[in-house]
Image (cartoon, rainbow, N blue to C red; front, side, top):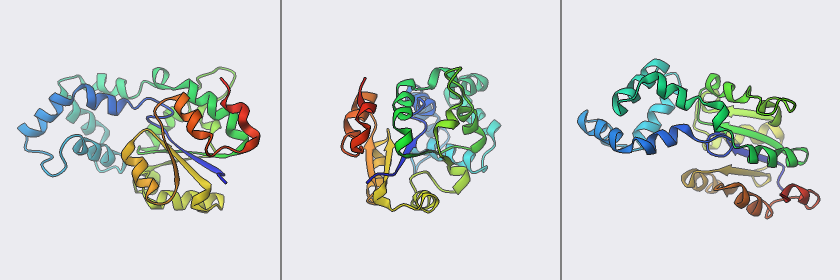
Length: 218
């Protein structure tokens, strides 16, 4: 029986501004790699995701991160920073509403490949004036900078299992990335590949507890 639901932050709770930036500027970013003989082993977009992970691990400075993307895309670094930090326009409110309905039945864990300081801005966000901060919805947030490993690493799930004293079959992982879902499924952890709110509600019925069906109503 599912006891802990683990939700990807950027892509499920918030729009993934970094992924959107890569998609919008794909041609320019690939050209930048080729011109500077970069990413021959990793390629696009893995090279840029690896760069993002390095900033999470404090191996690349915040300033250098935006400078590199500015050079690659031709956009002003401050404009790129604004795009990736646009808290108000990135929240998926329908997902928040769904989680609020099921919160009393489960432990909710938020995971992100991000620096804790960066994530905190999103956790402190108050989308509804009378309903508190986003952080109040979750029992525990975990970032890659907290653990030193990516969110889909086995150590992330061990930490969650140890914290809540549950087994892997008691956990459900939700992510918008097919690759991340594949990685987590290989650990025999339940997963839902998020695409939209209606699909999430439908797939969740496979795992839901019998007494929370009202959460699935519009």
